Length: 219
Image (cartoon, rainbow, N blue to C red; front, top):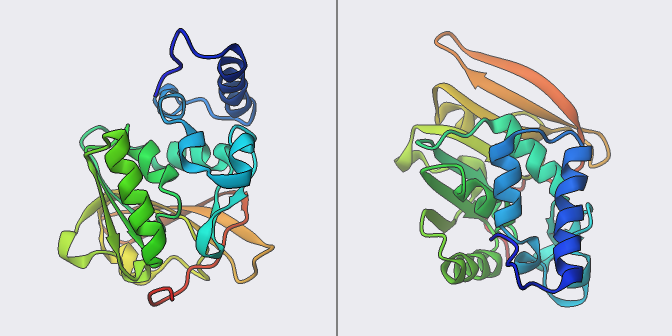
């Protein structure tokens, strides 16, 4: 969603600062920056926190979850190296913001959420924004979507102790998964995994902090 020419001056400046902040945090991919500009984070932040939507910080959403800080969303998206023909699996829909960004880059995005209210609200927002290449499903994301494999890209927006085996198995050869790992909610590392003909290559990217990846459906 680009900034309209007749937008209020303050909003235009806020969005410009938003993109500038992403660049200053090390985001360089032009396609990712363009997607971050088109998708308005304010659409995904409601209530008392809506006036902080353009700040580079995580914000609370329903069901005890968070919407990640924009620079982390951008850097994870950049690390995923999404191509225009890729089929992407996202584990942890949350507000829907990350899936919306991915929808600007990929052919098809499947996103799974264990909390029914979050999934419903996200799908409603995707429909309102005309993001027709996103499919939102209520499911235990730790097991992925085996009926739709293989995926070209997989992104996990919750921290696991190790890259989940069921998700690794759903990655095509040459595919990439980006996932935060760590046994503590204070010490986590963002990992990029590339599936090869003989196994998996792992690369540590940066320190992060995410809610834990939990099995089962939310109540």
